[in-house]
Image (cartoon, rainbow, N blue to C red; front, side):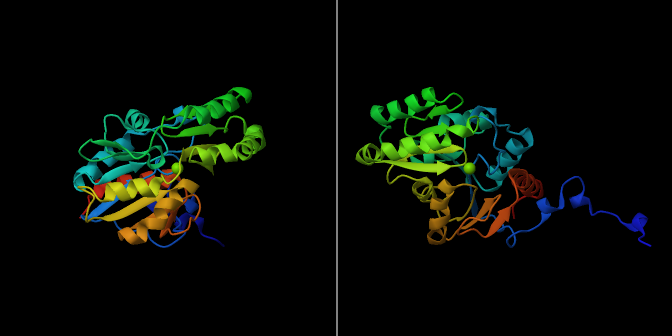
Length: 269
Ligand SMILES: [Mg+2]
């Protein structure tokens, strides 16, 4: 007979499915006194939402990030496709160093903002605007230095949007615009600019310089950072699936938040 009454779940497993605690790819790289944290936002520390504006930023996460930033002397940065203004609005009152618009904007710990590219041209913007208008439910996010077409609300538009990207390929190339397909999103960003370029620029500045970077991301645009991590002496984790060049995989953003909150509570040593 199975003696169920003797079974006691371990406290850390209670209330969450087992797979969320299952180490899918080695241990989470340690965060030490000399670490620097670089974090993608959507799909990494925040759950994806139906629209970019609908994401939820838990107050425990904001508190944990503030504490970690204090412990690491300011060496915590966001790395996102979103603009710096949107990042600040999401995580207010935090105003961390950040890579915005997929690397086109970089803000140091001292608050100085550097644009690594020119704004997206009006001709490219016009194509994206028309596509958003032609397909109800497709949302245009205009970040000045980058554009994004979100089709999470209109997945049926995906083939038409992809066909349009193909159709305008020559124009995008002439305008030095790189088109990237992500999770229910098509991004347009300047060629030669990516999250890796942004992280490299930040990693050369105080207080990141000389620290061991740990980067977390979940999507295709994050591959450019995973790719350069060995050169920076860093390590990486992905979320939801194993991406090339990572040392660990978290099952979902909730698990990443739990890890960050625990790190903040225990303190970095
Ligand atoms: Mg992401």
